[in-house]
Length: 291
Image (cartoon, rainbow, N blue to C red; front, side, top):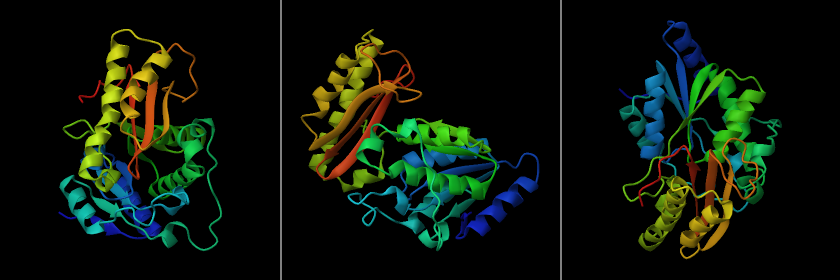
């Protein structure tokens, strides 16, 4: 059965309210996406299906989280294809608003994010997390009490959303779902479609570096410099440019001294050709990826 296609916030709120009112077991789960869906997104939808009686996925390319040099205009869009994929994953409703629905005339309120948003992506994409937090807060306000499922590939985003939800007492359970990888180990991403075959092969250096660091950590290595160096040794030869390769506290993303404990997040952002890719490995939590 095809999911219901909802276009306005009022339609989405009514559908979620009706689902919760229909019985005590009719809980709601939300999967926020920007579309161009792949198996990673669909794994989030299946996790939501496991947790709730009514599952809604949003498909909205959010303009406020893109900077001047980002790829908003060329971000892939395929709503019909996305709806078909979500139907197979058991989603009940798809929320696909227009920018004007989410940011109507006069809209001027933004969510200011805290320290967890400052480093890494916060440094290289100023304003990005303010846009993310604002649109997610809007979705949570429309949907109401629910579980919301986010992928751990966007690890800093997950922590930002978790902190916002906690600090604002929002009635939402934040679920972080493991990274889904291609058979060769590359983290699934909508941006992978931008890679040429040669760039796609080079991008595997990212996961090889994380895997090397993961093996070192499992073997007892605790030096931050050594662990970051293992990643850089694999990433530097394949990257057109590197924004960061850093080990950070896995809960707060605070800077670490030279001794790394668990959980610690190893986070990478680089460009291969013109395509910006991110990946991460949470030492002491995530399995070492196969590369």
